[in-house]
Image (cartoon, rainbow, N blue to C red; front, top):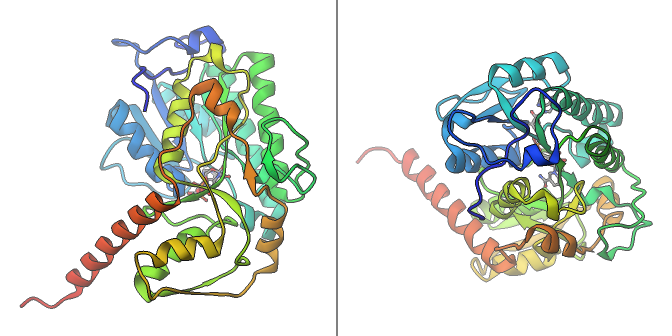
Length: 351
Ligand code: NAD
């Protein structure tokens, strides 16, 4: 992680400008960070990392679902309600919004209209509030922003996208909206195209790469997993500590170096179910994997890149992953095994 100070949005009432966004926060002029969708897979770990970096009180966690306020300010916030976002931004004196509230790829194919309304509607609400209140905005896009017409191996930063899923359509529209608000109004919008994210803290929210999280829980608990994607389905993946660090480092990056903003390709490893099972077997030799293909999620995965090119992120803000497949697998298994042992210990009757 870089050591540069946090650079929130503009400190005044005027729309954010690139110059104002680059001001380090100092003394009394501290603006808070608002995280939406903070109860989700990314939000839980992003809030913890932001609080560790900027202080518990500096980060406001919000979601449709209730969140504990044990470690800092928290509220129920429905991002479909623009006025509620505006109230929260004014009440907490917010300078930067990490907008994570969304419907993920597999769920979006089941409820495409709702996915469109939430993914586009909540982002527009956040961008409007950011424009009026001078906030910087981080919004994740996804490898799902690419469709089958994009080059699948070494997918460039700038290329044809034309996704065929509702999720992808909302992600491309979101990237363009964020660029529009930057170009037209000077809002400091930044984003990454996340690959599939692997984590142990919060369960995944209905994406096509959820198998890469589920497989670890099943390996530790049952020694066996039935995978919904084909053995050779290759997709980009990343361990959550890298994903969280990417968001923070991008928001702290020197804006004068950013040629792209929404959204940077980033990746850490290329994973297939078979390769992941093999990596797990190095630690748990008896682990078995079977396949029961879900045609909906397989079709989504088959429309996505097999390896994206993240050289623009590396060049423009120094992006560099720290976890490869082996390091991520070892860490996931160790943490989940400790948790499983603790659960067994807690269930043991007292001696
Ligand atoms: P998640 O589904 O785990 O969490 C999303 C959260 O948003 C949930 O807690 C949900 O309650 C909340 N939410 C939904 N509608 C809301 C609303 N109207 N108002 C407020 N909150 C609402 O998702 P995640 O995995 O944490 O993903 C966050 C972002 O990152 C999304 O934009 C997603 O598309 C993107 N992304 C995730 C991955 C991944 O593998 N997890 C990969 C690429 C991109």
